[in-house]
Amino acid sequence: MGVHLTEYGMARLVGIYRDYECLWNINHHLYRDNEARQAAYKEILQRLDIKDLTIKDIPNKIKNLRSSYYQELKKIKRNERISGTPYQPTLVWFAALDEFLRPFRTERSLFKQVSRKNENSNKNEDEPLMETGAERIPSAASRIEDEFDHFGKYIASSLRSMPPEFSIIAKTELQKTISDIQLQIVRKNNQHFNQSPYQCASSDNDNIGCETPTSDSCLSSVKIEFDE
Image 1 (cartoon, rainbow, N blue to C red):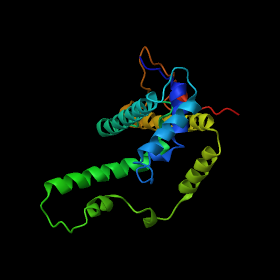
Image 2 (cartoon, rainbow, N blue to C red; image 1 turned 30 degrees about the vertical axis):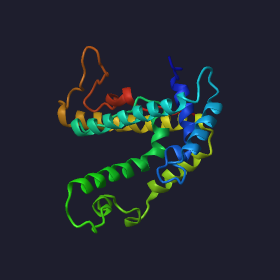
Image 3 (cartoon, rainbow, N blue to C red; image 1 turned 60 degrees about the vertical axis):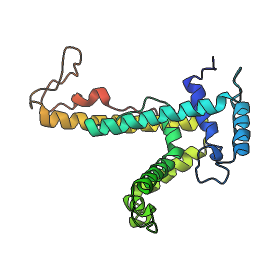
């Protein structure tokens, strides 16, 4: 029976895995180099330093990591399609893994689209196959960066300067804060459009204690508190 990794162990694996681009960057010159990959697995094993974990376990742990990651992505897409509300990933290390795998999700998707097009189409073989896929991707140079782009870069720079474990914690807290604010907006909109102006949505099990039509306490249960 293989060694089980805790959530903390998986978070550590994400931080270490990121350092070995030959294992996840499909454009890396050593991505298909088996010798380089084996050397990376060996170093990851040494850095994890977990009792009874072997070098043969490392590829399987990474596979499980990526599998769980893509399952969360499917939940996000399904939730957006069905309810239109944001889904909060339950994996504490999701944001950390998504940060460096995200660009390659698009590339893999395009590669599959091009492969299917190449197999099923008898059109002119000289036609560039990547053109259709590329048209779907907005050019980064097509718009001017705004304050949010600059803030995002500042956050990214700050996270990169942290040790892996602390960057994972910081990203998780940031993600939770954004989701909580989005939830406040959703609840406020639902209250405005779906409720009587003289009461707040409540039940025997969910009394949020609104006393007047103008009370702001409807959102008190999801107010965000920041530690000073």
